Image (cartoon, rainbow, N blue to C red):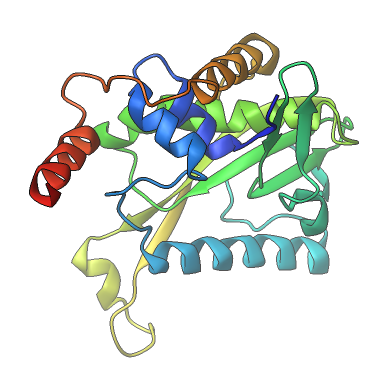
Length: 237
């Protein structure tokens, strides 16, 4: 049986009920890549990295998280960046032949000894974000599932931390602000239900089932990626 490696981020994209099975097969066999997938804008990677540095540097110097950060409980420690790297943060199911990997944005250890896993999103909480919530929910529960087999247990909470841009023009005209345009972000917490044992094993089994198919299955009706692929193939012929 060929070993399957899958990221927590890609697990939802290949295994949720409404996922296109053909796209799922392609992602599993091509390390998560899709022929017509949009690249992730670099500005969001920069903001994400800056956010993580600000939180960690504040905690390292003052032994507390920043005042502007949402309430996630009384934090007594932060899991190190080395422990959160995907090379260290994984769990293998030997029966399925599947290794699940992840790289959480941050994990806080609370005063009671339990752990709170958070993922940062630079976006406003809108209807579009609600559409993506099932994928984020799987991603965070996958992180919790991995944590069960690491010295990062028990996990007591999961949260999305949205950094919402405050786009009212008056905010950029405050007296005393540095010259030039500037944009303020406000951090808002959205709780995620913690249920790794109920959800993740069945999704891993589904991913294994799709991966083992000899050829790509039929795509879901209305799948935009499949439609673009077929158009490309017709032109190529």
